[in-house]
Length: 311
Ligand code: BDR
Ligand code: CA
Image 1 (cartoon, rainbow, N blue to C red):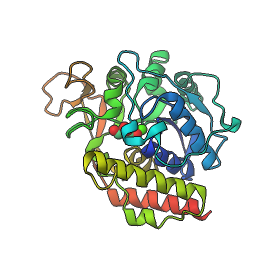
Image 2: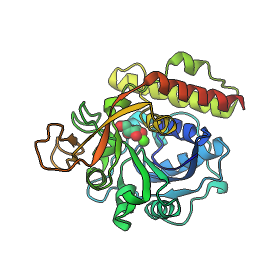
Image 3: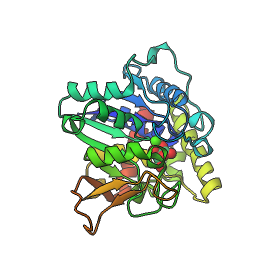
Image 4: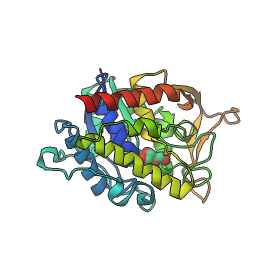
């Protein structure tokens, strides 16, 4: 099993990604760190804890992260994900999932040391906590097996501005630091925008238990919000594609580039910029996902949900 730490801002798609990661026998989730993003961090933390209780995994530690980016104002996305950050039922947390008493950034550094060279850090939220962890421990990239990020729109349109995706737009300075210095694998809108789940498969999930009902509600309401706002029929479960790739590395095809992220100005803010033609002398510093096997993704997610609801 691969030890994985997930930095998250649930979020309907985060919620599904967390259920997938927590359930899958090939992954060992060593902790969850919470980020501002889809809602303020107090709410994404409550959602993270509620999800752990829903899947009966109160043993997984939670560390609370930064409540805002360092250089720009807080931006949240309740217009998509709903009041409180998730549309649909999430149980209220109990003392069983009280957060640990260190900051998310410190927790990331501690876990990276503890799993020296073996830990996967999956960042599926604005990158404030990961950038802070890198500031605390500049050797973070060497201490990790892999840093995989949902964020950016390398060769396609963004979802906040024409060039910027939400996680990178929310804290562009953190995204720039992490992309420039931490050798990430970036799973951006190029591939996540098509990572939908067929409504028939969703309909077939058992809603007799609270988990089945919650997953059904999260995805159904998220679909409805996306339809209303963007006119798109089925919502992309962006963050779950990252987890699927950790389970099966044939899900994504990637290519390496010199990469940077813009921080300032109306259009440059949060733009992920690959130097695909080599027009600068910048070194190759990360990988970007260019294609995905969506059938494989849907099979991994669908089979996991069915297994969970049967057990
Ligand atoms: C990303 O932003 C959030 O709204 C989602 O949870 C995902 O991590 C997609 O742009
Ligand atoms: Ca997210």
